[in-house]
Length: 337
Ligand code: PHE
Image (cartoon, rainbow, N blue to C red; front, side):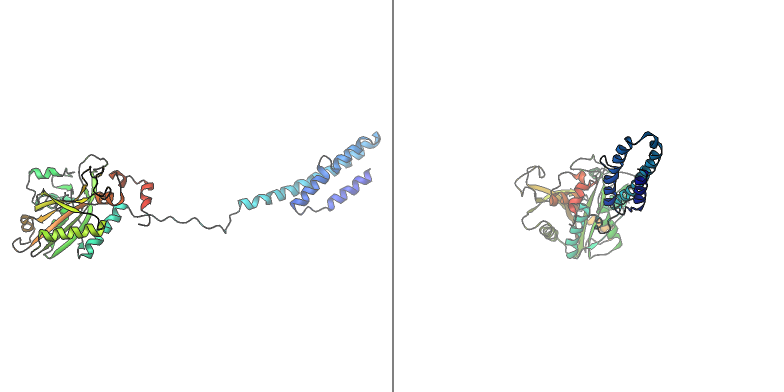
């Protein structure tokens, strides 16, 4: 039996396990329950007692050789088996870089500015922190006049405040330029108001002015009518209601027929069929004179519209707060616009 075991050991030393399949075959042939090693132990049981010691030793050597060979090979191939799952697959396409989208308010601001720039209006900006003159006094709001309460103001100190409207930029233009003056002025404004679906403590406006010789209310109406048909389409009506602003005389507010219910009546237009989108009027001669433009020679119109309101109408947004809460589910709907 010793001879048999020795030649088996030689045979095993000569085997090369070069693949996972060969290793598995080797395991079945030698190490499984019906494998060669078990057969040998069966044989070992019946040999004569005086030979057991020597044969046992040799058997152990053979057994260890078999086990060692299998362990080494299976470790090697198992590792290799795992490798492909850990490796980076360089042929996979990369993750696409996400593009941001324009904020709906900026989108609409741009659309509004585009319409007016085609009419020859130039673009101007002014500061959000304003002095009393540009926000109030220069616009014919007398000191201590109740008209100042129309717009609840965030004061910074006695002289400075966050501007309550973009009309402050009108004053800045008039004091620096002589007519003809035709400009559009977008920007953010602030009012001390409780935040709700319909009001916010900051919002956005686009101001417009046209000052020249013989500018009339008819010019104002035509310009705004052109804007509405360009921006919303031809299916909408506009109407003017008399109103009051210290810096325009006469003053009006303009409504458009509700874009959401097409004038039939809904929650957004409070069942009136009309939605107010801007304030406007002929610039008060006091304002022209106070800012260095001769009111006997020139006249002009001005208007100021709320960008939030117009965006809500155009994109059917029902809550103003959505514009400032940065909810990506809302903002991503404007991708590609
Ligand atoms: N500034 C006014 C407002 O914020 C709107 C307006 C602008 C009215 C220009 C007339 C002329 O309510």
